[in-house]
Length: 212
Image (tube, rainbow, N blue to C red; front, side, top):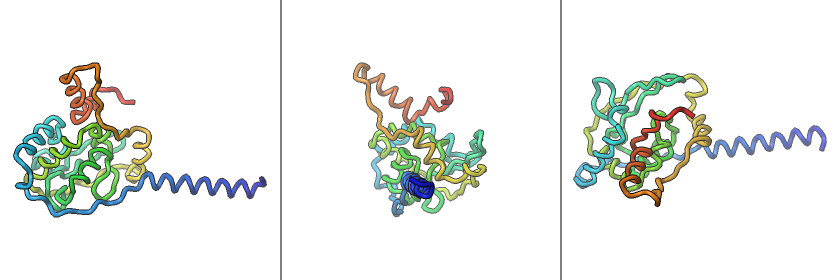
């Protein structure tokens, strides 16, 4: 094969690789919904969601100092810049009021918002992916019955290229495993429940394990 042939082959391989990377990184937007009325959720599922939100410490990261609960805007300094948490109240314009349960579950497991944008792993979806459908639907019910707060977080202060969200697809390829929790059959139910909560919603390892 002559030089021109090698160059053409290289271009084809590069184009195919770029196309594959784009397809892996791209996620479609999910259709918006009308915010579900709070009465559409049972008190039992809301109570369960409240307990799970407490275990996941959702309020701490999604509430700015002096702000309304879950309205976002909490600053999280990282080695790469500052990330601000989002509004997860059911406000239809600035929160998640137009998110379906499917959109919520995708965000919790794959780190992709309703509009198809990658979320930064300061939101620990690499842990949340372990959570069951039942528990995620309970969390969804809880958040959809909170007070609607109109609040927009400040823009993230991140340098290029980290501010380009498609770059996060590379991080996910290396570190994200979209999987559910699998009980250890050699351990009892209490031990497995503890592991499920600690490694999933509790994301204890995020702060109590060394960086890898």
